[in-house]
Amino acid sequence: MKRIGYLSWDGYFMGIALLSAQRSKDSNTQVGACIVSEENKILSVGYNGMPIGCSDDEMPWGKEGEALDTKYPYVCHAELNAILNYNGGSLKGAKLYTTLFPCNECAKAIIQSGIKEIVYLEDKYATTDSVKASKKMFDLVHISYKPYKMENKDITLKL
Image (cartoon, rainbow, N blue to C red; front, side):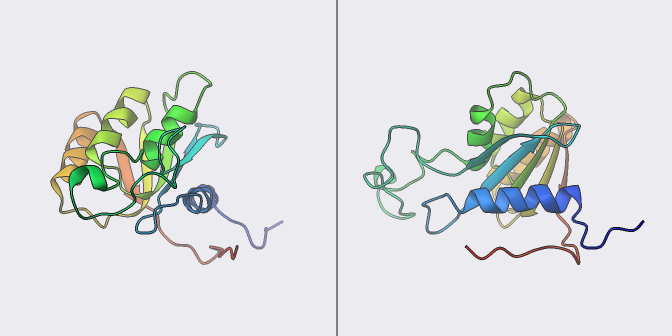
């Protein structure tokens, strides 16, 4: 029997990453991540936000100005948050779904955690040194990465 309305695993997990991104208070770039096991079980999710205990309302979210008056030295990226949110042991062999290609700092954490595959929605910073460094490291350690391909069955959630 053929199933109608079937959503692929990639579509399902990218949808979870997109939904997680909606938790971010970053008005410029909301990013979400979802880590899944080799058995397609959700292990962890994350979004870009301030460290636990640092009030989102008291921290800067701007992109310009003096370094300490911007979000950059403070924000934890979605991929790092997803890795840190996991408390079940090893992530060896897991797959990471993310709405934005990981920066070089997140790439280091991804490598160290044992994640072996990345599926990303956007790569809008592909020409930056940060993303070039990420791809170089991923290639060196044989972590595969691929863009998410939109499907006919993709869904849109209105919240």
